[in-house]
Image (cartoon, rainbow, N blue to C red):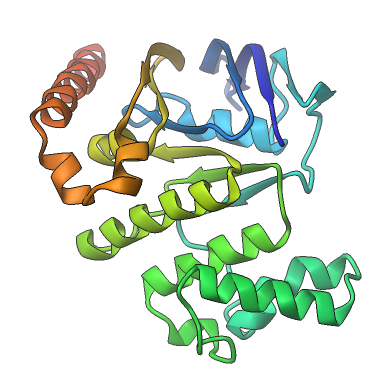
Length: 265
């Protein structure tokens, strides 16, 4: 299981013509094993930069990160990303996409087949294993992306706007699937999103980030992810408590956007 420690992380990008952009400044937090964290904020607040640093794709200019006490200094199989577009191999079948990681690691074929079969059932793609990825809808492709990630059994799952390209109904169904997978696997998950309602509903914890420089400004401990596993998600989102919290956060994000526009004028 994965415990993530982020201490004093800052990121400054140097521009070709001189000067630079402070994308993140002094970000610190600890994420316990099995927690589901959502990160919300306006465009340009450093959400994806933070995720890329945790994934090991970027090295911070200041600060350090550890996973289970081990420094994060590059990509690792214990930390895997799920992207908005799925980043699948469209010329391969669904089964081949899911088995790609275990196949590359040399896992025996019979073991891999059991894992793939189980994951197809878990993500609701029974009977689609031999289909090419390009034959699937966007929602089904994201199910494949989740299954492929789980096939590699990572300790920490990083999701960058995984549902952002989906229509409203498919997005709602996929939110439910993410909660079901979290309950079943108890993986540690960080999910980046622009959608306030989605961040509220999925996050056991939620961070709100502010821009210029990107920084954490507020943390919430939320009951809705657990409730969404027991109740109808639409009832949860329609509750007065949920709506009040959503409006509070929308106002906060709106003020940030207004401040950004004011700086640009």
